[in-house]
Length: 288
Image (tube, rainbow, N blue to C red; front, top):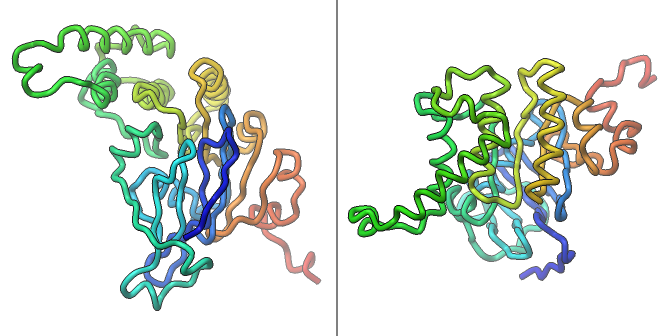
């Protein structure tokens, strides 16, 4: 079994993760680190494996091979089994021997929350109820205390915390409205506020600027910086808006066909020929 020494500030450590579907390798030998209070971007062309990597970290998929650490503890591990023993095309076969596969709700309770490329709110519930549901994840009440209304103090505290969160995100005036009635930018903001209501330490944002106009994108940049400063969380970001990525991230990792082709500072990534080729392609004249 592989022993891994992690930096003391490590929040997320993805180690040799392979995600293979039949004969298709969607993520190939992914290694990625995020430290406390860092904003890191995972970028790449469509189909590069970015959201698949998110789905592994959040327990939607169990990786075919490799493991994931969160706050110094191994929370996910798997290795090729059954038919996959013969089909497996990744590296590091035989280095992992355990199966640790928590469900997404357990991952969230550990302190990892995410948003989605296509906004997933409870559209028929109010803005307030969307955030309160996330708070309920950490409720200490049970059937007995709920039946006899012994959890009133906890309920009042949660509702007060939701109101404060909505104020901080400029959503308090909409608290009684249906989530579906909000403009697109406010829906995205609500989804982020709901994620924060889980009291997480790592926020995964899947293309948060998708569909936004330049003004909304600039507001999003301010929100992400505000989250890092005020809530002391680390952020892993998938994004195609490179101006946003370059302004906000300390480090960027680039995937192409599931494989890391570059990793470094925004300046290093912007000048990396492999990244330029992956995004822009190389003409026949350039190859000759």
